[in-house]
Image 1 (cartoon, one colour):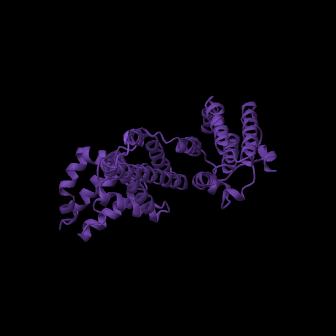
Image 2 (image 1 turned 60 degrees about the vertical axis):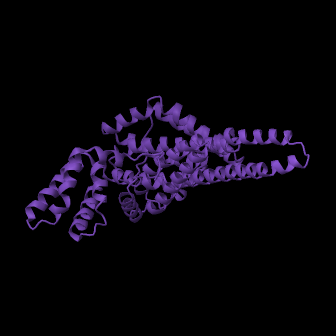
Length: 383
């Protein structure tokens, strides 16, 4: 494939990791060795290195996932299954989905498919988008604005926000195909008219105006700014930013929670009350915007809340309270996260449902976010 927009860290790490390069020289022979000790030693060596650098080890093993030799294939699959359950292992597997090596990427896609992340289809869309970018580059079509959305889509998938990632990646391919079609049709029109120009000139028709129009049209092909998609792209980038911020905040808090279920609030500090007051206000704004179908304004309201209310140090302070063993702080965190998701659901139901399933479903005990009641401090938003 031609030059890529996204270079997978899996490819970079696998190509530069000296230990993996050394392992690759003897891996197949070790797996086929008649001495069990040699095979065991190699497996332990790989396990040890996976703890140090899973992003180079996992894609290396995926190269042998469908190897013709049964022993090599069997051991590679067993190691991948084991090592992707380690911290950082699944992220290395997801990174491998974007590998330029077909064997690595396709194997990662198949595993992620089995784990419910729709890996096969997402890799197909990703590769299709990369191909479209290459064609656009060759034809001189402007794609800088779309690249940002493309990279955001990959970031969303890495954060397991699959529905939102798909939505953005499909939009990327649609926009690129539309621009290619417009450019191709315009260039073909110019060529057709140019072929007729000598004939028109011989007929006594003045072609000065025609030539000037063609020059303007040719310049338009090079300089078209695609204003018609600018608002849509900005909206999608805002969506991605909001979802990524919420996902990061939830990961930061959830890894600190010790209680398996959502606890009831025993009381709130002044700071807690201020947070829920701010949440209530943004919830009311978003509900109003949603009624008026003002999608961008609703997102901007959520983004402003995340940037201003949470950036002031409240979340880090709440995390410290949880770390100190404050059970009520856990309840506050749970109720606040649920409130944020219920508000997000009003504008981005798929993304909100993805985050709920990833972080809160087991704690809340409800199958879907839609079935969950508003948290007690935000009951007024239920109407």
